[in-house]
Length: 326
Image (cartoon, rainbow, N blue to C red):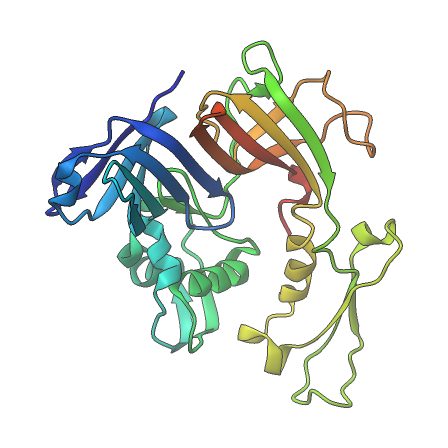
């Protein structure tokens, strides 16, 4: 059974170890830069003598959660503390950035201005590409600016990987590939969900300056939704409604809403070092999807570590790799 090593810091570098954890919940998703963690633990007077600044927790594969403390709750008897934390990369969504109009901007500048100052530790895959006529609009956060640039530059959404680095290629494999439901990794529960809620059927668009009486002759159809027999349309004016006026946004809007169309929910006993973006297989004996005779090619969309009265376990949301890019 895996027991995480956990501690708080105070005075910037001093540490207070957490010895008796009652419950812990860690959650990480593939396309969001923020990991969350909630921990309840037995405390002592040392925790009342210092201003706690950050929370650290070590998980398998030497992955270290470094968390900003959002909330601390103290029990009346001074025996329990509940800490709610987010990873330091939450600075990306907490901080708005100054509006700018760029004649051109490249990936290196985006990294130095909008990633590195907000706790991103390096680059896994963020090729140095130049984008012309790029705007950082009023009210945008650092992450929104990076996402807009990434869609323009790579046709891909960005991702902060488990090491805290930026990548536009979040899907990675291992050799040998992990097989969930095998003898080494038996599943205590597996369910399949066909999620249609976010999907669009059509996007009609025009590129004129007028919102009204315009010719919305452009029409992008989502072939994935036709088989479900219903319509969900959007009308888009690139000039007035979309940042940076890029027609590719239509296809991105269609396909990113397909990402979680097929979801397998898997529960494993104990905590396992399986993180968002990792490509995995389901054992061939597990076949619960009504739409296919064999499992999809899958990747981890969400990882959750849980430790409480019900035991220690890992919950995974697996998405269809064929729906992962646009």
